Amino acid sequence: MNCLLLRHGIAVNPEEWDRSEGERPLTKEGIAKTEQVAAGLKRIGMKPTHLLCSPLIRTQQTAEITKKTLQIKATIQLCPELVYDQSPMRLFPILQGYPHDAVVMCVGHEPHLGQTAALMIFGKNSSGFAVKKAGGCLISFEGKVEIGRGYLEWWMAPAQLRALR
Image 1 (spheres, rainbow, N blue to C red):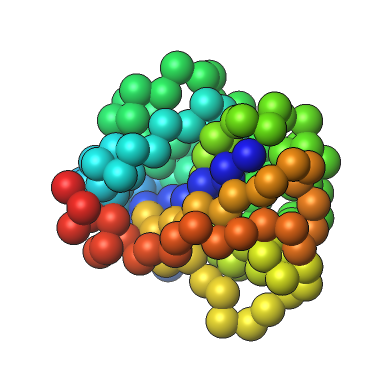
Image 2: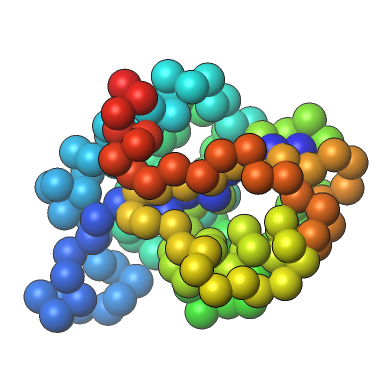
């Protein structure tokens, strides 16, 4: 299985937002840059078979943009386990339910995604692992998805993904 961890694009600044955190959307710049990142993912041949995303608006917007650009046929599955305040450990049983040949894209937040990647690769939390907004990484598993059994295929900042267009 391949797991693409993708952080949401640039969102409205929390200090400038007077509604709930869950409703905070992407900015116009965030939408444009996320579209460019999605084009970069398409250029390197990313073809997710499944799409999970945090239920927050900014991740849903990011998922919709990538779904359209990558022509993902799968329905976006809202996954509360991808919200920033959840334990990354809760994501593993979900991923274990997918076929071994699946390519699962998970759209979420920091620090959750960096912690998830560290658990996948090293089997423990590791400082310094952070996915930038609209950045991502691809982690592969041979056989069962288990903690510490993932292989880092690539890790790219959004500027690198945008440059792949």
